[in-house]
Length: 380
Image 1 (cartoon, rainbow, N blue to C red):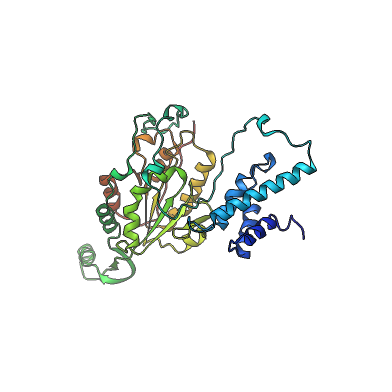
Image 2: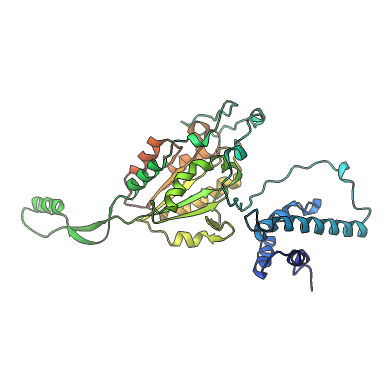
């Protein structure tokens, strides 16, 4: 049996023998992940951490009571045995670990699997001691937007953020107000009178569609590491959806920006193709709420993130009735970051957690045409 055709099958079987209940489908998920390039980024430097993280995401259940200890023990034994075998085959090729200079780790986008329980504020509160080590802000050339002031006196207390559950429910009532859609079955008295006045005689009545209060909410949540400190501020919205105060509604996860897949809220390892989600949207009923920092915590925007967000928003805009982007990072800190560019593309549809701004966006009238985006400003 070829080890290239069935990579790390011996690791999979060792975990099964140790007591982990793994299925062939879970092994096939690993093969697919390896085929996409996950798990092997630092393989040439004999670094097993990437493979460990991929296997943990795919095979270990998100609970402390399950088999995470078995996984860590067996994986460590597996790595030790493999390193000994490699060292026996190529004794001169191995260099002492202490003599190797540390190399910077490349940036990676992982499909993050959040823990089963929300972390406490003490666990996720950002450190302020290293604030002076942040890189220098880059001028973006976007007029009218102040540059970010990433100073050390910024203190984040998510529990004091102003979006209460009352604000969430009020916003939903404004967003789902009735719209006229469908066949013209209702007499438009005013338009009929106006037509008669212009023609000078009775010609015909004017009909219009009946008002309908059908709306659905889709919430897309960025669950990357940079968003963990703001998770308590998201809780009122999640609670309102879970107790059906906001319905119908669906929650999905993504990391940094949605690419080809979103991830189920309750089962974070279950990928949902973005094409399938877009296909079920309705241009007169679907309201999309995006929760994310849009790169506001990174002063040097990554071109991959900028391009990915542009592609996603271009695909989303013709499928929805309205779009609101909630950014928990204060607006005065967007300047010089990718968030400032995204706010420009959305033409005012991105807001921080200001109650007045959120309610104002919720009250905006729905366009009779598709949702258009502003063209990106050319970089100078």
